[in-house]
Image (tube, rainbow, N blue to C red; front, side, top):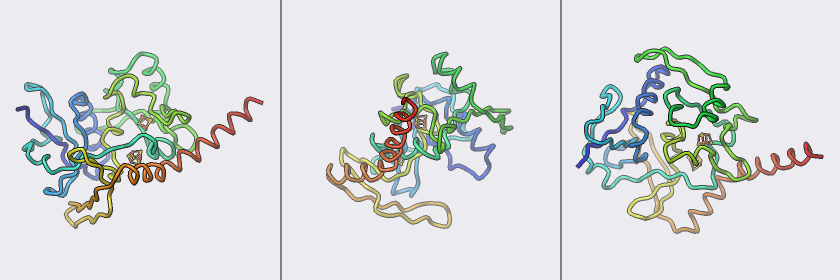
Length: 228
Ligand code: SF4
Ligand code: SF4
């Protein structure tokens, strides 16, 4: 049985967090998903690298796979798009570019960038949130999808793979919606999930997707006007 590693909790220091993201990006192809463990009261970014892969234990910790047995898997259903369409804050770490085709890399390296001094040396990050209202450059407004998806499951920036609103979750093939949460002083969180049917789930997706729907309408109208 392979070992399971999770990222340590993020800190308050930006340089440390960027270093963590760079190290996590190295193991991107073994990323399993983000889980909420009611037992640990903690979100877990889970990676399962093949044996022999170097894992940086400064940013990762090993956990027993049994912790995941009662954990909820965070989901990002198609149709919401809230995280991509406005104020996305999206960026990509330089070491992630190597998995992308040349034309995509060129597009990214033309974006504004920032060089950050991290405990592991200088790391460059490229901003992707430079379209109107902070929309990500890779978000297809009409389709409501990330155009990086066509390059493979792990082509998306690590920050997008790790960031979840925690509203939608699945466990043992069942659908759940977040009903409430409480954060303790030590940072641990109680997230309460309630099982729902497909209809209730879809209603929530539509509700969450209303921002994208409005944005798409304005985007289409602006496109029509520009074409006349
Ligand atoms: S708000 Fe949640 S469901 Fe919507 S795009 Fe972001 S992570 Fe996905
Ligand atoms: S890279 Fe893809 S998933 Fe990430 S913000 Fe941009 S469109 Fe969304």
